Length: 376
Image 1 (tube, rainbow, N blue to C red):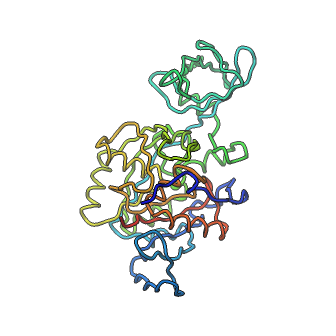
Image 2 (image 1 turned 180 degrees about the vertical axis):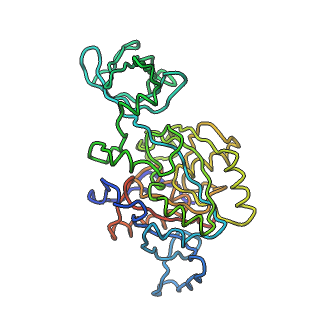
């Protein structure tokens, strides 16, 4: 396999295709079906000789790949089989964006990345001039944040703070009361009540994320019920998505990029469900790249809990994931590299070209695609 560079994952995206708001209904988003397997009960189309006309075209998948099919997301149950296992990320987005001021009156913004023990948090700080350690910041909503230093090392990008409120609220309670939804940088409006509801999955359970596992935003209760009725199994992992998910890759040699760390957990019930799915010949369907990173981190390390900095690029050997439901990602992003590693670089780039031609909606509030793991 040839070495890939950052430029390989670039593409031109019209600005108007960046979704600023979600679809009116979660499951009414579009779904670009880029799999090679036909739906249950439908025979696979015959291949067409190279240069001929027909339903298949060349791609980097060890042969011929089907032309993509434009669907609506609520059609997903018809594309899965009884015994398949959908694995969701049940992290809950917290209202992690907080505003305040220094003793000098200078304005600042904190984006809480992680809650530590007690009332301490780790956060990004946006301010014109960094205050010295020990500075007590006055935060909107009537609490204080004392700067304790950088974290985890002295030259790191994150800062450690101690929150204190007159009512003794913990950091999660303070964020719920005083914070704002941490919408991605490419969404140009301020957060609203609708964002509080829609930038959150219907099954969010464990608070700690500053970005949503966006592929799961398309699922509603009716769709989950239909999946259950068809015999598609479900399981959960937790990965608290950090702001680093939007961190750009700055080196042309992608091997020089350092991934951000995120906390994950694969509970025993999910480990058992995955083992049973493998045993019965079912397929593991990861809902979102965060679920892929969680499952493959567990497979690579043998650790069911911890921090992961896994960086998945073409050539990666997948141990658990057979299919992936994912949104469309930023050019030159680590997530473009991940989906290319799973489904094949040329196939993914062809799907993106199709999505742009067909005016799919991109990024967090955009549409979704269904991908299958390419043959080695």
